[in-house]
Amino acid sequence: MPAAAGAAAAGAAAAAGAAAAGAGAAMVVPPLLRAVIMGPPGSGKGTVSARIIKHFGMKHLSSGDLLRDNMQKKTEVGILAKSYIDQGRLIPDDIMTRLMLNELKGLDGYNWLLDGFPRTVAQAEALHKECQIDTVIDLDVPFETIKRRLTARWIHPASGRVYNLEFSPPKVQGIDDITGEPLVQRDDDKPETVTKRLQAYDAQTKPVLEYYREKGLLKSFSGTETNKIWPHIYAFLQTKLPDVSQKDAATPR
Ligand code: AMP
Image (tube, rainbow, N blue to C red; front, top):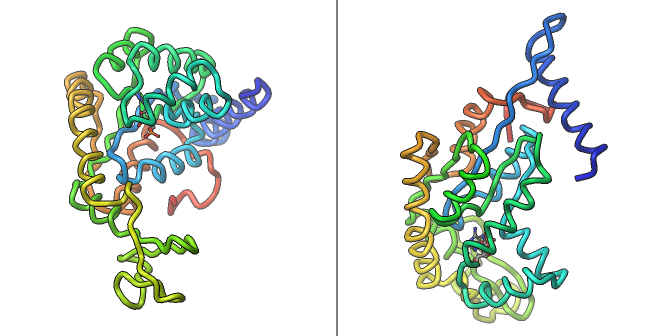
């Protein structure tokens, strides 16, 4: 982020702090917040992260986005990462840690939200050596709910039409409304693939959740719907940072 934009963001946070303290009171700048968000695929992590960024003006650092950016630019890390990602494997800890810690240096002095990192205890330990995490937001959504959500998507391959069995089902189950042709599921959305992804998440990240629980940093938010979980996350973060979205703060979306 350019320095000018950074100064503007810091200014906005300071102004919001002053407003929160009340007119005429001494300016209160809240302490920096360094947070991690965790949650299985399909838990609504993307939606929640976007809302956190919007309301609390935190910098968002997503390991997946960073890797995709590197792959697109064909950097050394990107070329290496592609070989792992294509096989559905995690990037080795030392590479991932170096990449993320280097990126974090550029966020010194900002509130930030890490997404997708750390994914292993070794990564969490390496991060801990470099800087103090203040809180870990854990989206605790039952696997059954996620499975239902992720496997509800069916597509008509020829047109790309997408149906969702819960929100926008086809008129006849398994059949495209327009052409009458059969609908299919993407490999990624098939129940067996979804189960595998969830099991992999469980195996890799449970120890990381435990690591943060032991440090007293884990804040779990349980539920089956993002819109019902979000107000609790919002209320929790509001105890730490002012809402800088300046819009409709009473009914955060
Ligand atoms: P994501 O978009 O977070 O699902 O990340 C896409 C892929 O990037 C993952 O499936 C992993 O192969 C890799 N990846 C992302 N973050 C990490 C990490 N912290 N450690 C190792 N591999 C990662």
